[in-house]
Length: 169
Image (cartoon, rainbow, N blue to C red; front, top):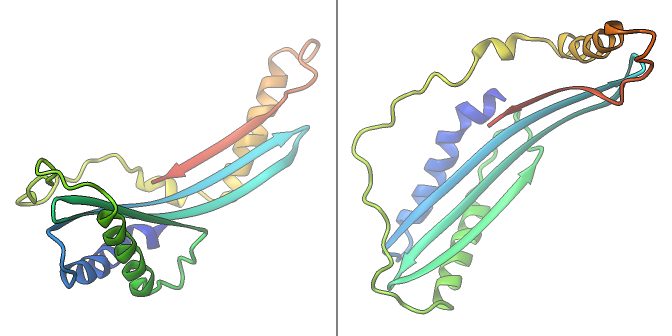
């Protein structure tokens, strides 16, 4: 998921460059990337192993006191091949401008002023997570199932599902 974190600024910069050339009064950008890793173990075997990545972008624009909105999502974008999203962003922004034309003007619509400075970096991401191999994560799911059965082997014959899930966003 390193592309997601390193490439986010470049993607947002592309969008801002396009937005700055449009005849609009203001805009907001929403950007999200996430990575999902799911493993399910049943009877000592891996029943499910699934990895997914998502990228989402939304634009909200203000044009002549009218609000417009447009968004798009991509499933499993290639982290090894960062793309130029200019064509997609231009289409999305034009869609937002057209959607604003279909709304009623409201003099109360406005966006919050741009923040001065930057947000503090919160220590909410565990860097050690990236260093754990897929094999170790698979073993965790299998070990969880074995541990549940080991509590009382006479009575616990089957575990419906033992799973390991990881989401980075």
